[in-house]
Image (cartoon, rainbow, N blue to C red; front, side):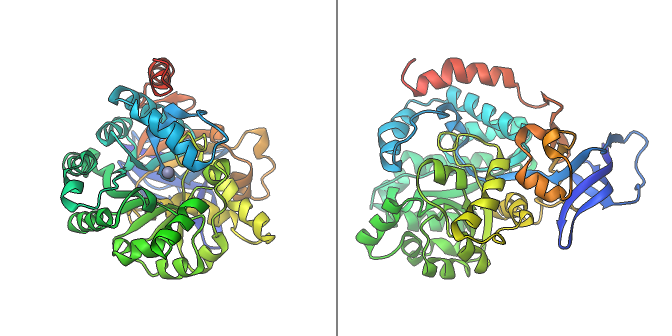
Length: 438
Ligand SMILES: [Zn+2]
């Protein structure tokens, strides 16, 4: 089956010419096969989508989230991270079950695809449920069992429930949905684990060719607590055990130091998942973006879970990533609109180890696409379409999303997710369950 986008503004983000006006973009099956200004040959039954008044972008990739935490949206606000986690979030998560996880994940995926995202990197529990929801939704997912293990005994680590679930996840879900699902390894964070766990995860990731997802230097307390305990930063402590010899996607990096960044930039496959909304909401701080970019570190964007954001709308992350660091550094040239959009697309693909497969609007890449409705009043005039997308657009301006050529959402309708059921289940079951009201 082919789809031809006709006379559309194709946001290719190419150097010097980031938008191709009046473009034709042909999707054949799961792939983009043509991007150009001449109408390409196509099959007689090709679906033609009128692109006038619309823009076509690579679908956004949310490089750090915890999808089932959507059940905790709006729960426990205004509390420092350590108390927020230990007194509110962890007890609520202990009450989760598979039914609640499925409902909250479906709701999160519905929110994502209706606001321009087609893929997420997720670190959580009940990972088989999350992966199954993603496959049914037709969306991409790098899924990792977040390991919180304080044991220093390698045997005990391998016998733990989390470790066994990680092995089952790899066995049952790696490559599922024709590769929609990729399994990553995970260390939840330096402060919630031990060097023995880091060794085990490094070996597991290396043996199975996996990326590792982790939280890194998110808060002052985490970063400086590590320095007091181990006489080195979390990045250096993890590096000393070879964790970064595997490709790593590290979330936050708010307190990364100069030496951390100059060491991490040489680590193959290292990507920093910048989560500006979460870092601001939890009062954590602001990542050192100038230094990260000056050192050539690949940066992606993530929303983090919906209890610390509380949205999965990547347009918010893009806008904030493009503005926040200018204010902090008093530098109007820091983070260009094109750079911010690339973080949400190419950077996200790199964070998932899928850089050769998606994240670009170009022939040969997967047809993971977002169509924006440019007719909205807040998107006129269009002196610069890229600036309007970064500074003015929001998730509700999305007309359509596709993942591997399959339509996920179009004109207010979800094609793969029963959104009414997800809302009902979250409101009537998952939310009361996690808040202890059920
Ligand atoms: Zn997180």
